[in-house]
Length: 159
Image (cartoon, rainbow, N blue to C red; front, side, top):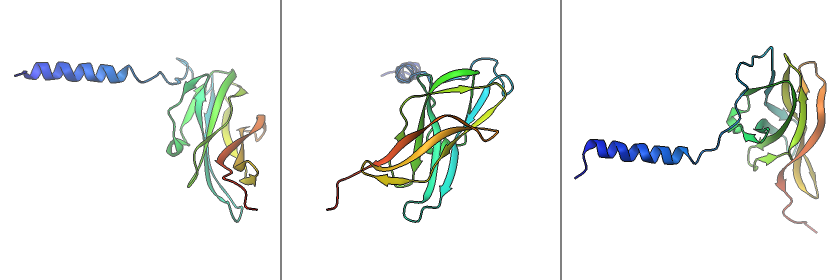
């Protein structure tokens, strides 16, 4: 019969084993502040298109190859980035749809600035249901190009 210490040792080994399966996510550089770095935050926007309108949540899913571990409910959590160029991936979620992601995009951010992810109204074409997403600086200017996010692929044609 195993004593209490044996059970604790087994539990500790199990926790360490699980901990080894989790990859390191993105962390802001040490010592960076909102004045010395750039803050990037997601958005929750309502679009008015009659048929496909609804709430879209955009958030950073990856920064410089590291996951943020954000989900649709954490759209309003921000990340501090060092000034300069970064490779990011943005996720967009709509109720009733899958989560769509951009390709990896390169952005350049400046110290002391706040940037917000923005989405456009939904569109439907031969590829399916999609939106555009972009990064907007606190002065209203766009940073980089708008990227398409496919939320629901087309399921076939109705002829």
